[in-house]
View (spheres, rainbow, N blue to C red):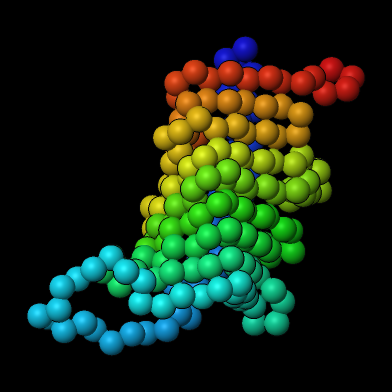
Length: 205
């Protein structure tokens, strides 16, 4: 059983970079950089945790050199806090397309992006979905979905953490765990705590 579980998630890890890193990285840098620049507060003024600007019902899109849509970030409201240089977004929805035009979607109740867009946190019903997509050999890979209450992505080190219970679904196979750590550079995913999995046999096997 352990060997089978390892083989299933070893194959799944090949597509996690697109699912977890690509969708979170695309567009976040441009969203942070496209927000207004405000004047620095006077050194004598007390620093308070208050937003210096708001964006309501906004959409930020990025395109490649040919004009094709690469990513879009939509939110109900965004607030920038200058004291910690973070952008907080309510009702966030992120769409990202890879080079083949395949769509990955991420949604959450709230997102938090730091000043240089090197970290992104998703809070409340965080969900990342990649619909079925063919691999390089033309074999259709099943739908992949992550669902949990918290997701923390580190863009520079290409790591994704979730210290809270989560559910991972690949086709009809499903795993739940108390926590997850994914290292894209090492291509290693660790599920810890109470890990449970359901593997559905393929037809004819």
